[in-house]
Image (cartoon, rainbow, N blue to C red):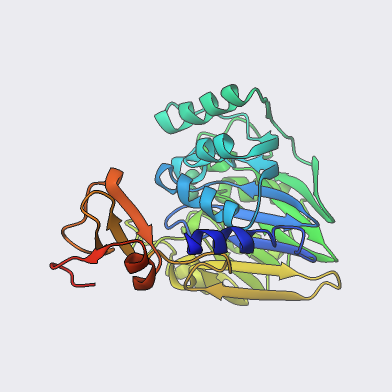
Length: 324
Ligand SMILES: [Zn+2]
Ligand SMILES: [Zn+2]
């Protein structure tokens, strides 16, 4: 109970306390989810896989966020839009932005149902459209065309400018989309790049990365993923410093009012309000276990406990199998 109170108090620090721009590349494994906070305004670009929905919701709630001004589903693959339905059901949403591309999957249907249930409509942007989050301005650079065969090339690609610094969010855009941005004379030059398609070799072509020329790059990628992302050849052709969510966990990039860039990496959750659940209590037997115990109760009976002290205070006794 004490822990829950503590969580609530800390959460009050909220988004108002953020000076400048904060970009949270949330560790959702082999998937994308990026939260932007600027001057109390929020934007969420993708929400991970279906199974990540609750994690993303909790991450935002722990930051004290109740409203998302702009919610983006970059393209209809599950690893980007999977958790959007949970987000839509748990927050008030200003604008929902998605490309004009549908996909015949349950994940995508669930998102459409959640949007319909929320009574909102989807904004389908076109290249050159501007979006504002606090003092940050985002311009849509892609998709240049609407007839791509490859769903990844339908990805919404945004370039953000804040205090003179630039961030390119490449989603899963692959080389065809990259060539079309180049052909469209998009101003790609950026200080920071969210690397396209989890560092796959089908993205980040040499000309494209040459024009972006980032000093800091972020790869949203899962540990030991079956696609062998990120590709070694992609890592070699990216200049500057590369941060990877599989190695660093959640990565927070900040741009100050004066344009200073800083990067925070957290093997653990970066939110000071966050606490790791170390033990699982069984609400029926009143026994508590290590989170890895083989004798955990069913999900319906599980109670998260933050410490041994909390477990004992709440009347739990230790499991004899895992001996917490
Ligand atoms: Zn993806
Ligand atoms: Zn994709």
